[in-house]
Image 1 (spheres, helix red, strand yellow):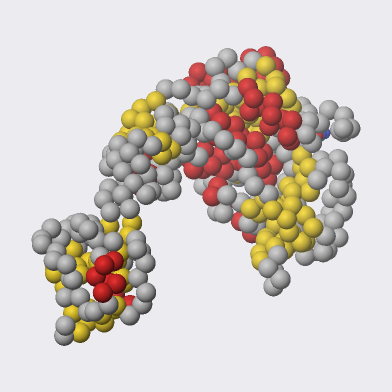
Image 2 (cartoon, helix red, strand yellow):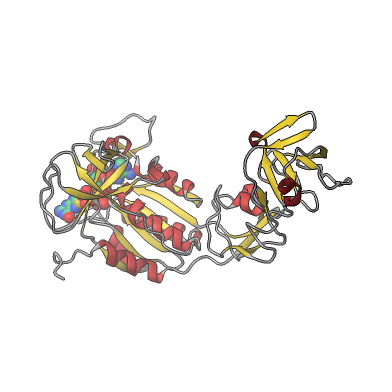
Amino acid sequence: MEFTAGLIPLETALEQMLSRIVPVTESQTLPLLQAAGRVTANPVTSPIDVPGFDNSAMDGYAVRMADIAAGGALPVAGKAFAGQPFNDEWPAGACVRIMTGAPLPAGAQAVVMQEETEVTETGVRFNAPVKNGQNIRLRGEDIRSGASVLPAGKKLTAAELPLIASLGVADVTVLRKVRAAVFSTGDELRLPGQPLGDGQIYDTNRLAVHLMLDQLGCEVIDLGIIKDDPEALRAAFIEADSQADVVISSGGVSVGEADYTKQLLEELGEVGFWKLAIKPGKPFAFGRLQNSWFCGLPGNPVSAALTFYQLVQPLLAKLSGQQGNVLPPRLRARTLGRLKKSPGRLDFQRGIMRTAQDGQLEVLSTGHQGSHIFSSFSQANCFIVLERERGNVEAGEWVEIEPFNALFGG
Ligand SMILES: Nc1nc2c(c(=O)[nH]1)N[C@H]1C(S)=C(S)[C@@H](COP(=O)(O)OP(=O)(O)OC[C@H]3O[C@@H](n4cnc5c(N)ncnc54)[C@H](O)[C@@H]3O)O[C@H]1N2
Ligand code: MOO
């Protein structure tokens, strides 16, 4: 395949990065609530059957098939509630009133839901055919004692933690948090709340990165704004490297006269790659420092957020010990308007997707796609991903889209 000179395709960059990353190994055991967002260090196995006993799936009546076959009304021998089993005598020719989740009385072969019954003076009448085993939830049907419930390398969310709780397990062993250091570079940067001097702007990239790191469950070391001064930058690199598993900077990765980032990475470590065939985000730098990985995000705010999302996010997933595919899914949508695109780089435009009347997805551009138009992120709910060699896209053509995940409110 032919590529524009010097620019690395995104897939190659991801492959190179991810193949080198070795996950953290230290682990700790935490109560379930505190383990949210963490990654399992070991497989989780079940010490019990779930459900733990045969029980009713409906409010109704527990019956024996022979009594149903006899055809008459059945008197009620007693009641079973969730947490209050029926353990009394159950004579032949009777049924047991039972509630959802109540243990099945010994000998019960089916549960008939209340709506299919009628209470008469002589007992309960059954108005619909009854199948052996109906409305019974069997012991161990969901999980067998000893079975592996979750693999090692699984990120724990509201999908997994209640499952562990259902096993009666109160703590889980997880890998430690990834430590990530972040700083912004640039003489022009000021903190929100400070007055702006001539040519100054507010530092937004560090906030974006810090927020995304928080959401991804990292321990964040925020080193603030570093001046475009090689000495100050060298000190920041060294301090960050001594504390973190991954160091993330923004700005100074291009070719300008105050762009020292790549130079320092060469001096203090090793450059893995620099300059990707993507738009925005071309001057992204990846490499290794003495103790940590380094990601140099471009200064333009859209480029910084996009490269974090597309490259640093999978890197952190791998570093955190998550196993399996860490790359986001893509869908197809019809574009509602013309999209400007020049061949040469894989383009991530911001788009608004929705379901069309015919049930297919359609997508609209957020408008101006400059890498300084940060408002495009909050208007959008997806990336429109335009292939590298593609030119302008006309309204009605099909494009790939990538729905935003929770980092961008998806
Ligand atoms: N001759 C070339 N010039 C540029 C190229 C190129 O290939 N050749 N690439 C352009 C692209 S694409 C990008 S992206 C930027 C990346 O530049 P840097 O990473 O060196 O970033 P800076 O020059 O420091 O800043 C660029 C831009 O972003 C603003 N910025 C920087 N940091 C922040 C921050 N923390 N919060 C908000 N805004 C920030 C900065 O003021 C500049 O406006 O280079 C192009 N140039
Ligand atoms: O690629 Mo730059 O990252 O377009 O603005």
